[in-house]
Length: 109
Length: 113
Image (cartoon, rainbow over all chains, first blue to last red; front, side, top):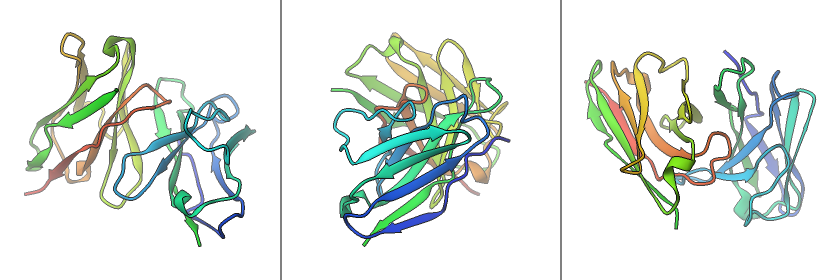
């Protein structure tokens, strides 16, 4: 089955840049979406269609997608950005199937 | 204000059935695709099923789960049959297909004898 692979964890100091990668064979033709999930809460969409930011999401969150890798960048990470992050995209089969990435725990300390 | 409220979770024995509901309000329900996503305890997010003009299912639930909607009641459903231990999870409903801008708070399903 199709998989989106992310690093299990990323650690940064406050104010530094965190980059989270998402690797998948369908990413050259499918958009990537990114969700932030804080402990005990429902996920929140932070990036859609590779690089667009929903209203209310801070400008420090940005996204890109090139080749088979999508990247979520948090520029100037804040303590409140500590959370699990998941990429999300359509399955390579094109049969209206969707898959979440394996998830990345971002620690800011 | 957009709201999604899941219900119907609980404890069920392996092989049993359960129907989850997601009551939607604050938007024109029949204009949107809807999706179920689940999260096993301590694990990551897993896409389960989406209903738009068609329905689609993850391989892990295909043939056992059925997604449906009643647009007159602004309600999304997930009928879950032949439940297994690995179906134990918090089940979320979410608006849309990939761009889930609104989520419910989830309903917990525990499959155990």
